[in-house]
Amino acid sequence: MVTLNRIYTRTGDDGSTALGSGERVSKTARRVEAYGTVDETNATIGLARTLLDAGEGVMQERLARIQNDLFDLGADLCVPESGDQADKPRLRITDAHVDRLEAEIDALNAELNPLRSFVLPGGRPAAAQLHVARTVSRRAEREIIRLADEPGEMIGASAIKYINRLSDFLFVAARYVNGRGADDVLWVPGKNA
Image 1: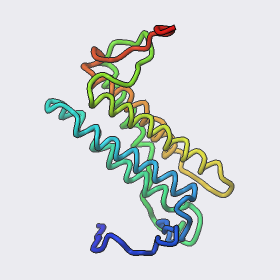
Image 2 (image 1 turned 90 degrees about the horizontal axis):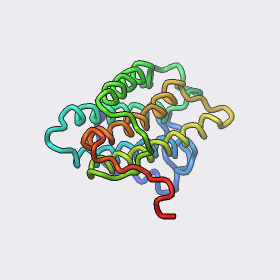
Image 3 (image 1 turned 45 degrees about the vertical axis):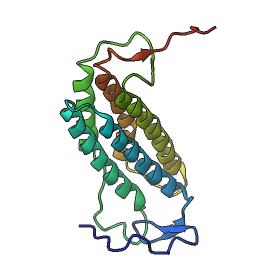
Image 4 (image 1 turned 135 degrees about the vertical axis):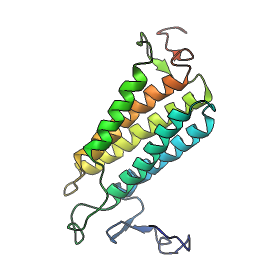
């Protein structure tokens, strides 16, 4: 259980922050960028949830689970796999997270007509916000991959799969809340040429 009695600590006033291992690093460190962008993704999903119609309870539940998963992903990323505490148990994203997300993508997609064009972000407000969340999650994925590409850095394969699958889920979710695709805004190549 997390207990926060005091919000500010002043320990970051020098531009550093503590990882979950206790190690202090710059707030611009690649690892901090990665889990910070995961946090940003979570916030954009939270905004999308406020825009959902009252009848979208199932989508609310799915997005709430994803928000919790994203906190787990942030916890996974904030503790390096190497170091003094590498042998201590820690929260990890697993293939079970990925499998659940894939099953939810398949279930939502089964209710949609196949696409015959690319979709432009828009339509209903919740759908447009889910597209924003999708693009932020893609940025989080790029940050995680950059971190994984750093010498000596290890990121779990399931974490990378999860963030990759998340943008797919958010795309399908945007179409789903966009009237099951009826309110999608389709790209018309060369329309304004």
